[in-house]
Image (cartoon, rainbow, N blue to C red):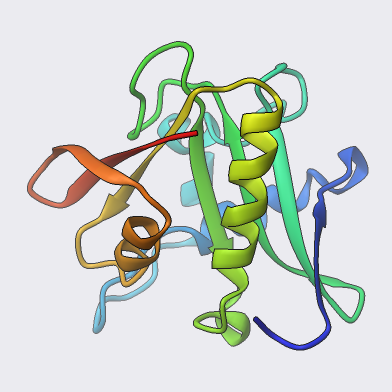
Length: 159
């Protein structure tokens, strides 16, 4: 993990940063052009952030470096790409480029799993592109593939 990183709960007044981290969470394969930022306004992506904090299943954790939020992991029960059932929150996670591959995502994920278990959830799910290097992090964190498409794994972890 980066030196001086603080893993903490994202406060309600900071939920607006989830739009930026939703965009950062979009996996862009090597050699491909990034989509325009307004792609996050698509309904299938807005389910991750719209009215965040209004549902009892909404939970968000941040990685802070020198006063700046450099990573976020958030969960909610929603009908997204990784939806399993109406009792299982789906997870989204992203770290800004300069702070990736330093263990920050792993540290946030570990804290989120603890928090979800504390809140009484039995499992958590996610969808991840097969080419995404984060697949290894999820496997090491105990996620297992329960379904897949040509491009994505749907993964689940018991808590």
